[in-house]
Length: 124
Image 1 (cartoon, rainbow, N blue to C red):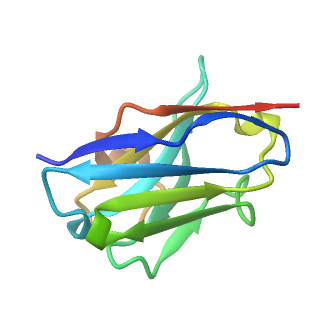
Image 2: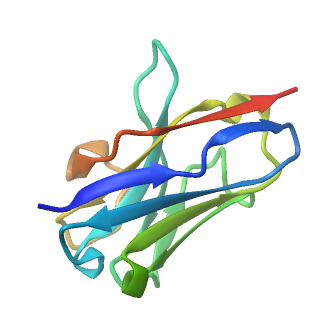
């Protein structure tokens, strides 16, 4: 059973950068489509980015396009989310998730396994 552990969250000023990591243990990450989602209190968890098993295909929410980059290192069983030009509205708990489907997707219900989340706070 693959377990996902996120790290790299924290407090940053608007315009700054953070890189989130998601380490998968207990399995082979290359078998899975991976995604990042985020959630603020009182709102539904929303899609941020997804990456195919090979890393060739990526997709992003419109709100983060041009600022965030998802990548993966299958040899290290790790997925990353590089976040640049951060805005206060990016403040949320960020979750890593894996899908056993074959296509990178923004559909939340395609992801059956989730990490515990890491808090990102962007101050104005």
